[in-house]
Length: 304
Image (cartoon, rainbow, N blue to C red):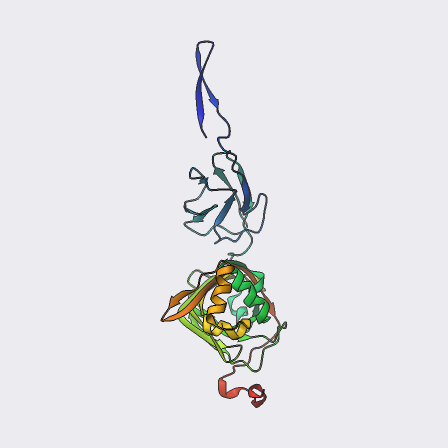
């Protein structure tokens, strides 16, 4: 806050000069009074225009970054679940306090053995796209499918998952798409888990869809009824997106992407786009995933 030293009746008086700009806070995350902030999520402040003086004052250590009109404060350590917090956003127009609470995500899983065999449905269209949002939303619309994830094993060393594709607008497993097993996902910060790989392929669309520089993370709810805070980042070859989105060729898709504010970039000698999202809630669904290798797929899957 800026102060002015003014003389009044011979005495020096320290007065608050008030706002020094017309910049406004368009949105905050968490919002004032919210009770569901993800314990591993950053704090976001969207301004009407950039303010280089803006500072987040929090009762916990963190790192502040700026991305255009956004001021981002990332705690150095995860916050505590089911806990009240208050931070101050000190900027040129004032210093409002934002009070919020974290959700229950992050509390220990009551019975980790009960997670084995449970299946969760990940609907990518339910998340908040961070990168490649327009392409990501188009992909979600055209795809119309969910990613089904079943826990095969849960132990101190890691968690093993089976990944399948659902039928269109359904939580039933698609029998014409092979499954992929992921072993040893990092669970050292249980109930939080994370997984990253240079390349991840699974049966989808007209054959396989390959994710490059793929990473995903999330947190099991204490009662095991859902996985919350799911986030992912991946890079897709434009050549694989062309038939999915029904665009003529790679040049046309990149031209469309550019109009949507998404950059096509080179990756491994090919043209690619990057998509990332977070804030996805994956509820439990009552289904047991069958392991399907390419040779297990029914003959009708290959008929026109």
